[in-house]
Length: 106
Image 1 (cartoon, rainbow, N blue to C red):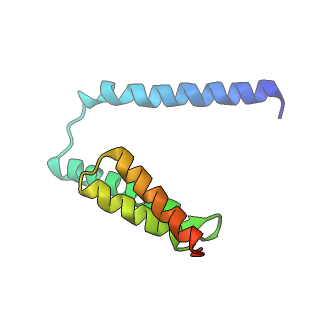
Image 2 (cartoon, rainbow, N blue to C red):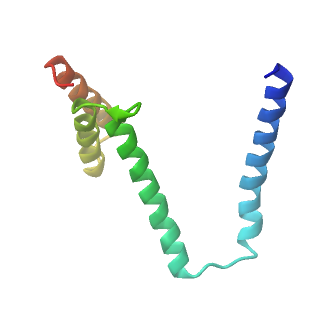
């Protein structure tokens, strides 16, 4: 690919993203969703986020990431659930994963 092609592709993607994001507030006033659909959309967002977290925590490439990373994510998740400060969540999750790897846990 030539540099000009990459620039045009990037510009097209940027314009499409902007148009998509701009259309939301414009169309919000024209359409009303039922409470059931609004609830389903909210639940779908949570499910997608949970799937992203699970995929990132459990997989590296196409294989299992080992036990240290999921353990770190679990510690961070519990601390976040308990409303610990963000820096504590990040440091505890990282320390857990690093500590387990230091002990030889993959």
